[in-house]
Amino acid sequence: MGGTVRLTVVGSQGEADILCSLLRTAGIRCADRAADLTNERGGGWGGWREILVAEEDLEAAQALLVR
Image (tube, rainbow, N blue to C red; front, side, top):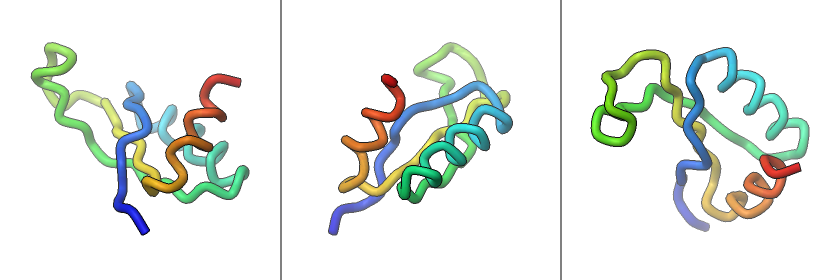
């Protein structure tokens, strides 16, 4: 069994809630947490949320995002 990996980063808690609801409906467990994107996006903490899934669910979760 693998660890937890980042699926994506969204701009607000509302977006994180919607995305996690979609994932859970598909049977994929997920979590979200505050993302420190200072270096990646040129800002501070702000409202950015990191969406996390189990490593073994990553491919299925990515497929949901491109639908």
